[in-house]
Image 1 (cartoon, rainbow over the protein chains, first blue to last red):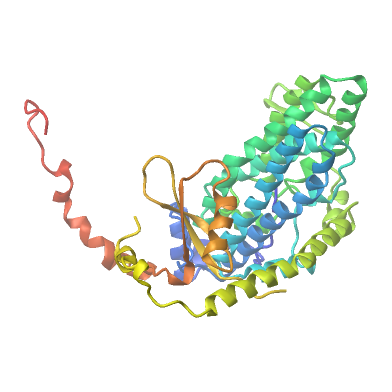
Image 2: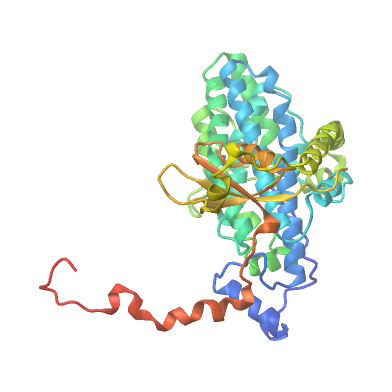
Length: 346
Length: 94
């Protein structure tokens, strides 16, 4: 999940009888599956929660470019380099779709970026783990993008129109990411013993953090309950995690890799895999900023932003100069320009 | 930090002869940059053959509050739909 533990600002979920008339009307629209659009009236808490959630999601896409971008020059072949570059470019695109969606709620792009850099807004815990070998890039595509798809497909039906539309675009592009990751894993697992060991080592390190991506069990969380009521969270963290495990274990078996969980076992009665306890203390430490790479990721992100400052300034100066340049009067050769302009653009 | 660049709305026409369709928005200093960025952000997979960009501030929209007066009058003109007129089964090509 790219947005984890999103605060809703409520202490408990209201029952309908407690709601003010406008809140009740809003909830009725949500319950009737009518999409909420930017100019529609909406409760402040809904707006603020969405800004937090979409923003966290956008930042995850952008920060997620760092561990992968780092491997472009070291990818093992020209074809792998080109593929990885296309994937990283997609992640930038996904971040941009999401920033646009958040902006429709009245928060500026600069504000969001400043909040990320100031550490005021989170991004997914998963990007604070290091990518030590080429197999990590395969594992990220396979597991991390796989987990992201699992979370994002239900969000295509979420109540906020611009967010749902961004999710639809993202989901269309995301399955390429997962497949390219699995393709890397297949190549390694069919390769030498050393290559296969590398794949196993990457799975050992990424398995548990991938399960943590879905966030802690949310049965007790008032925020999850509120988000579910607003239909900006459609399935619980545990439901999504279980689906992910059920889908991924047979894929690991195909690769001939062992999932690093001694308690993992098929449960005939439930029709699902049982799996071991997740170490939530690690998750909370990483989220607080004490993961292996938190500081490094933010340092790189801020460096990229600062080193790009002159480009942004130059572009703005150029545009201003062009806008202020005296326009030449109409020349005989340009007659007809007016006619063209009058025609519809269609 | 720079101040925010203007926001542009992006419209793409796909290859199949359909009209331009709104796909999203982006920031750019001018129209030329907006088109270049739209190409990278919204057409990485052959989504279109033509791009329009318009400054968001130049787009005027109907307001949600006007929904009823704007759109409801068409509800009582059901005869605008062909299904309003039942046709005898033996009559063809209508």
